[in-house]
Length: 313
Image (cartoon, rainbow, N blue to C red):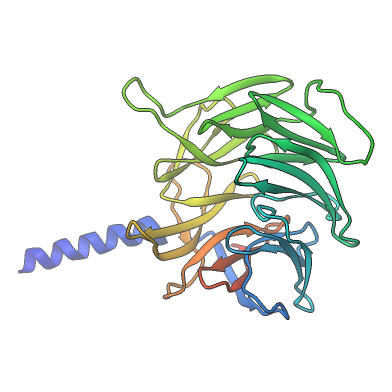
């Protein structure tokens, strides 16, 4: 019996060290965002000012914005799929969102003016696309094995010359990096006997590192898939600056989520996860980080939005 107690104590200590050893951040506050919207909202994403959230429905239909000061909700569009990976301009004035035709498996891209809600088509009736990049008046996306760019200015076209920035996406569940017109398939984990699929890919703000999920774990690497860092069982990961990753540590029973907490980890080998949310019956999902890294927003499975303020120790 004594040996069993020692074993259980040892397991408890190991788990504690794995998930709670790192304490790089202090959670200054955590508040639920309550709005005048008469329906539940999900998938919060910060606008550059850090004072406004872009939100959608649970199944990514439509888009709206929440003013965090007055907690007022304004609907922008009812487009199907608009809430899936919308891209916000650097000045926070416009959004590039998709309108999905699931029956015909086609989609279109639109620019939406947040203030006026004017919606302008960028590209119509294209094949499925994953990540979209938005720089200035230039939108980049990959289709049919090539990256193309389109102008967000009505009536202005752009040539299909080399895109102006590094861009990462997924094609056929593989990572693909476009860099100065050169397309590179990045597949650091597949072997001769194991074919690995990838999702939740993104590039660090300084355009030097990739972040992605493969299997059950999140990873960081350089743009060629080298210098691989295993961050552990994190899903829906997003960058906080160039050095930290925020994500959800979730559990499920094969049918639905049974638990999930928001965690942060430094993107280096040997780093430990720090849990930011307090453990509870609420299932916390899909975090996003403000541009200055001081705030994290997430939704719960029952449609509540929370915003945490964090401070690096």
